[in-house]
Amino acid sequence: MLKRIKIVTSLLLVLAVFGLLQLTSGGLFFNALKNDKENFTVLQTIRQQQSTLNGSWVALLQTRNTLNRAGIRYMMDQNNQRYW
Image 1 (tube, one colour):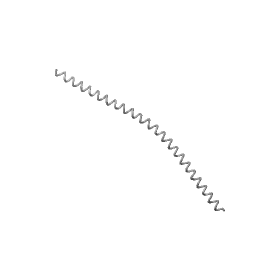
Image 2 (cartoon, one colour):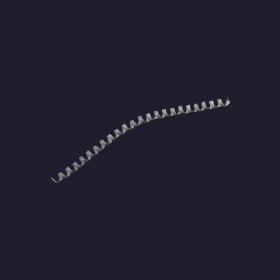
Image 3 (cartoon, helix red, strand yellow):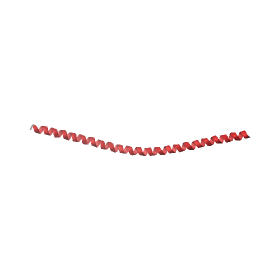
Image 4 (tube, one colour):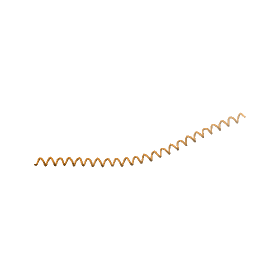
């Protein structure tokens, strides 16, 4: 009878350990899920800022091209007026 109680007690102890491991695993899972949600929100904000920055960069390049063309045209007009 004493051996049987030890076996039942040890089985209950093993079951309790596995239950505790299951709770710990669930807690870690929900913590990781919360962190992933926060990271996803930050990532969306960064992508939006990157998109805005890319738009500004495109506008700067277009402005630079326009200014370069205007400068070249101005220099060509000055050279053409000298020969007239």
